[in-house]
Image (cartoon, rainbow, N blue to C red; front, side, top):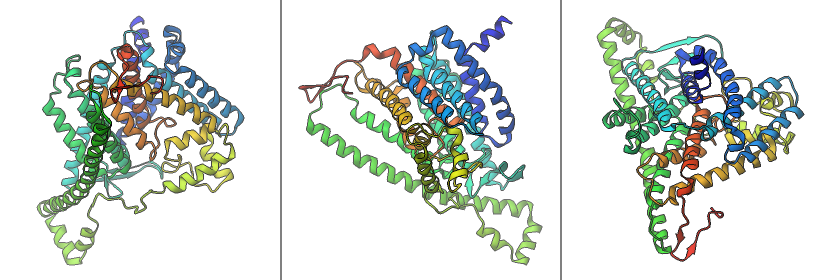
Length: 491
């Protein structure tokens, strides 16, 4: 019993199981049991918030906790003011936000936490599973193996192609895209010698990690998730910017100007070439897939193929070949309509918000019903807009203040440490967070969604907060242009 109690009070164990379970919530064949388990894990998480408050005095030790506390108060007041039939969902989201703040971001308040060991444990599971799922999907795609199954109108399985895009075993291509980016990011971190020297990286050599990165890069391209591609580009560009300006020598205005111009040219070429490669690779892989599928038909379905040729059906089938492009030609994929509706919702209660649980309900009750109780339309698909609508101007300002304060301190550790951190994993963590800021403009992200997409963001926030708490004393005052001193309060 004592061992069980110890495990139940282990926040690191909870985070690991919670993240892995949310990852499997994105996998079609494992989604239902994963969601059932999620109910019990959520209750475990709420209990741990209370336990950790007693053990670690979490709130009083929480960095920038005053802004978090004020945001939670505004959120709760918004729920009370906007009582409706969906109040239970608003309360559920409130506890979800508490878990994000106190168990994930607040991990820096836990004494004796080896966050690098936790990161490695979670990372290797995500890398192996995502890579394996992609390989299985590629194999089935090349040999024409597909599966379709409908349970309800809102729950179905399309394997390995969903709406002309590669999805593998994942529920939809956007889930696959985020999982691929997360895996590439984790592979990059796990290849850092500073981390490998502190954890047991047996079986995860650099060759293996680079191979996984390549497989997941192919998966990211074929799923054609624009938001995930933005996240990947944001991560890569931010890391490149850091490398350019990671210097312990004084910068003259001329040097800064030259670096900025050079960086703009490199980033423009990099982004343009990445988009071109994405287009060419999809076209090339589509041609390869068509050829391999035709070969399989000849080898195993020769008689059926001859009948199709006789009936003139073969040409129609070829016209339906997979191209890995969006079937929906709208560049916004319907998001502009959801955003316009969300702005109208904001006007209902601009100061305190309408509470997250009322977004769909108010849309159908008072507006045009663009937001619906369906998978694709139950959220504005913009993390910032969701917070604004849910908590109003006051909540958005409080959350923004917290985010700004956190970003300021996180950025200091890139450039104001006495020694460079280039060989550490910290630049990777910071770059992913910056990339996610762009990603949150287009997806159900940032805060109000119980999903792997959101909780992975808060997990990375937590690891960065551990760095901030551990190495704060190593930050020093730097000189700008040799003479002008940068005050930390200005940053």
